[in-house]
Length: 368
Image (tube, rainbow, N blue to C red; front, side, top):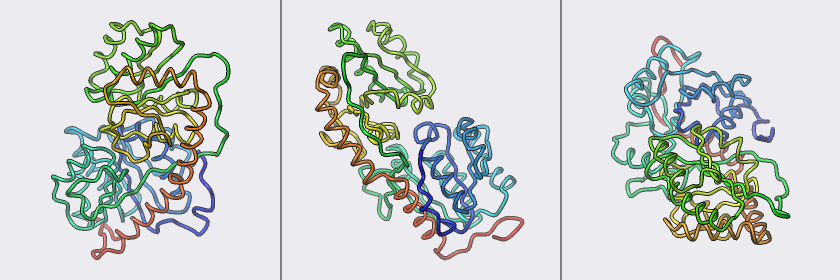
């Protein structure tokens, strides 16, 4: 992932200490963006701390100047421990908190209120938005939506901070000759995943003797059920289920197609990154993110229609010129709207706005 040095050539992007909190599900879905944002702010001279229960992210940031603090679990009854980490394990007073998602919201908001630190809550899913709509938020809190379409009727004053990742511009590979079509689906493995639709489509392609291999990457309570469905549909030779959500990052560069088989309740970076890398995205026509644009950034099918999905996968194998037209358009869209410079600029602006609001932050046992 590439970060232009000019982003922080004028010194710290934010003069203060920003503490980020992200649980393992957020780190899995948004890992490349999260790590890049933290590294960029830290490299600019901003003091950055990450509190997470995701060991993969902690390992990936070992060589950076980001101060990492591990917590046993974010979510469930363990979440109360995040306040102890904030109280006892920070190297410097906290000026701002950035909560990615809403896991730990109660304890994070409580600490922000106690210390009068600013708090940016980044809503990354439909459940995040629903939870925030039901929550009474205290002062010096800003809610940011990862996608404009996530906004609810109660979203007054909420801003949009769209995703961004630094990627090299590269020519789009055009499929040539006969070879296996590599399909990647990264999703939360639950009743909303839509994976059975993909399995039905694969079964149809298998019956036609189409050469397709799919990898479904994720974790969730429906994993064992999906294993049984893979075998019941007799697509176990064409589909593998990988119960490690981080592995989509390694699998995406080798994939031809990224499939989003149902509406993403929890948004993932995967399809957007696929667009930037020149991969074809095929998604159901009910996505909550504005970067899914039929014909421009992706191909879409009627939600729940395995027949249409199978047709589009066949088209991806048989119509390379149409694939090229869409992937080139999608890559151009990505590089014009979802750069790391745009993300960092919007975050820095949000941090400065919060810091300028009345009420100086205080730190138990010291001053900021």
